[in-house]
Amino acid sequence: VQLQASGGGLVQAGGSLRLSCAASGSILSISDMGWYRQAPGKQRELVAAISFGGSTTYAEFAKGRFTISRDYAKKTVYLQMNSLKPEDAAVYYCKAAIRRYSDSNYYDYWGQGTLVTVSS
Image (tube, rainbow, N blue to C red):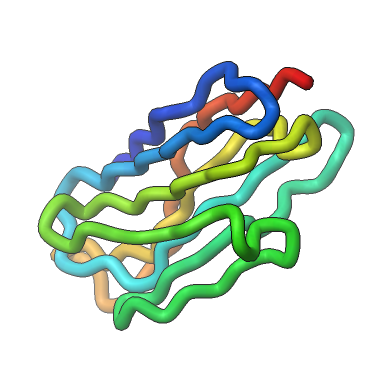
C-alpha cells in the first residue's frame, strides 16, 4: 500500500492550493482519511479528517478556509486550501486507515508529505 501526496508548492498569502493524496495497492477498504501538517520545530498536527461516511473534522485554524473531500472510486483524499497565510507553511501529510485484502483490521498509512510554502 502506498499513499502518494501531491499539490504542494509556493503560493502568495491569500492564495489557494489543492492537495491530493491517492492510495494504491492491494486495498480492500479505506476508512478514515485525513491531512496533517508539520512546520519546522513543531509537532505534527491534524488539519482535517473525513470518515468513510463523509463526516468531516477540522482544526480551528482550518475552519472556513480549508475543505477536505474524498473520491471513493479513486481512493483519493483532497484538501482545498484557500486564503492561505504564512503560518500555514508546513509539510502536509496525508493519512488513511486501510484494510488490505490480507488484513482483518484497518491500519494507518502515511503519505510522504508535500511542502506548502506561503510568501507574505
